[in-house]
Image: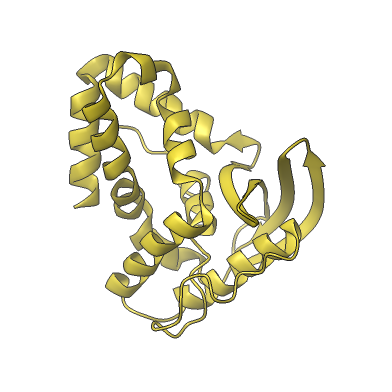
Length: 202
């Protein structure tokens, strides 16, 4: 399967799993993530996550990234978007296996690459609301690279903000990953996609 190359999807992956809390491994994953406003949420999500990228082992980062996904990202909604055109064609057991494999797939694909962005800086430049969606535009600057614009798509659930998509350098990440999944499923079938995801997440 084609995986979007750095610095686009992996950079967004780095930002998307960056809300790890403070560098102390024993701290709760969401301890320092602000819920006071959409911009404060994104700002603290990236800020605290980048601090963690500068310390801790790979195993510690993976563990906390996985906790983060369940706390600050609409993982089930994201997963549904990636297989939207196939949702009515699969069984309940196939769907459960896919959703169970998704967090591990994300970790296996991006977690070990995040150290490339430990020195990055994320600046909020604009925030607006579009219905029930909050769009937070940021500028991501990594030493030695040109700044990249990233828009975080947030929803609010149970009083907390959650990320459900990102657009990086004008590329819709969910749409691009969905196209990759579509291509893989057409060639190999849905069960093979899940097996591929499980292997990547092992």
